[in-house]
Image 1 (cartoon, helix red, strand yellow):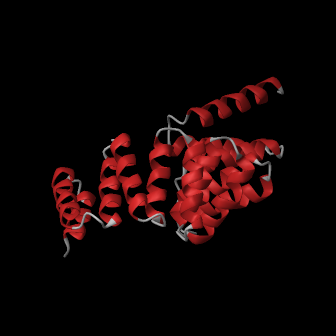
Image 2 (image 1 turned 90 degrees about the vertical axis):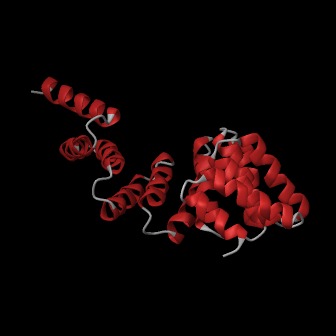
Length: 221
C-alpha cells in the first residue's frame, strides 16, 4: 500500500489528522505529482477548509492543466460555498477533460438546479441517472428537474422508480402528491402526503399539503 493509499484509507475512516500526515509525506517525496495535491485538497474540502482546499487543487492544475479531478474538486469547493456559477464552470472543465463519471454530471446538474437553471440541469441529471440507475437520490433529483420543467407525466414515472429503489422515500411521496393535485386526483394526493408523513412525521411540506386538502374537503361537504 502506497503512502497515498494509506492516506485515502485513513480519510475514509475519519482519521483526518493521520491522513494529513500521509498526504504531506507524499507531497514531500513527490512534489511534482498533482494527484497528491488533489488528495490533500479532498481532505481539506472534507474538513470544510475551502480556502486551503482551493489552493491545493489549483496547485494540481498548475502541475497538470489536464488534471480533470482537480477541476472537479474546485467545482465542489465553489458548490459548498453556494457559488454555483463558478461550480458549473469547473465541473464543465472536468467533463471537457474526460472525467465521464456520474458524480460530475450529478453535481453539474445540482449546481444548475440550485441556481434555478432547471432546463440546463435536466440533461446532466438525466445522464447521471442513466449512469447510476440504482441510486435513489440521483434518480430523485432527475425527477425533480422534470417536475420543475413541468414534465409531470415523466416526473411521476421517475418518482415511482425512486419508490421502487427506496420504499420509504418521503420526498418522492410528497412530490407524487403534488403531481396528483395538479392532475385533480385529490384522494391520491392525500394518500401520498399521508405516506410521506408516516415515513417522516416532521415533513412540513407534506403536512401543509395534507392540511390544505382536508380544509378543501371540509369546505366542499
